[in-house]
Image 1 (cartoon, rainbow, N blue to C red):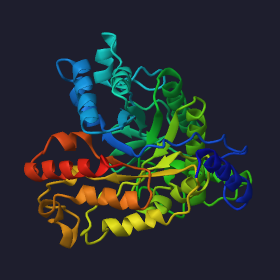
Image 2 (image 1 turned 180 degrees about the vertical axis):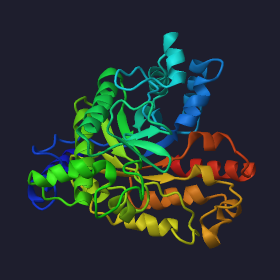
Image 3 (image 1 turned 90 degrees about the vertical axis):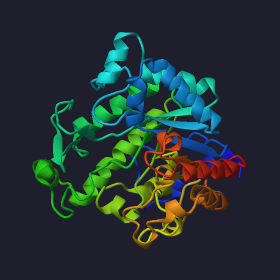
Image 4 (image 1 turned 30 degrees about the horizontal axis):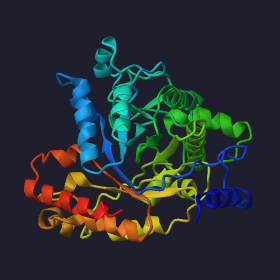
Length: 390
């Protein structure tokens, strides 16, 4: 189907799906055309960014990383710019991460360098953001609306100050950098951190005031509504500049996304105006006893999806050559016994007409970290042979 027809159908879905919640009071802006090429992406997490920035020549390290991505056929890079409440770029909203601050003093902006090096090699770069995480302590928080869960600190998703801060952070990325997109991953409400049928202590006063003022949503639905408002707002900010898209990489479990993370993935998929793409993290082998890849893939593939929403599959490069996949039960040895798992998973996605694949992570491709080096290499060669056909 031609892309302009896809846009039109997406808009018609918004007008006709009366029972579907609208992301905001006004009809969302028309979606940008998804990339037509099959997306071959890698995540570059903050741990690897840290390695590059801590090297003797950070600019050269970033350039070498991008060169390696291009050599391996990658066309899209998800570059971690904010893992917690700090920034690997010149931010006026969040404090700079110490590594970025040191480079900034010498006139080096890590994100700007990464963009230039990626674009020079024909690759797109998306700024990867964790919206709600603060870190192991609250010292870097830029508002007082925070809570602690499992030894980590988070911004309260339903707080107005959180919405304002996160959107301001995205806006400065979109307006100040020639990024090709923004990506959130699976960190929304921390899983299991709040009761499902009653407000947590940090939100009790706010929720009570909401109900007293006439609000009718349950506490769970109100949490989801708060996350949805942020997602829709970020989508609109990204679409304020031509060529910039917004995507989310959710956790694999659709039920837990909805009931524990308060991430309404089904709505994001079905209704235009939330995301341009979803990239579920299906980090499992075919023989995983509890979450086999094909079963989880089929659940995601069955989701009703707006024409404007692309689907990419997130694959576990970090498991290749792993002696034992700890939580895989009877399938624990699969990654040490097979050397074509990623290639076969890629083929499943392609046959289902999905739009791309992303590997976690770049470092897992280039360093074995105690895994079987021969299998890591063989997996990569098989994957290359598969995705170079697309």
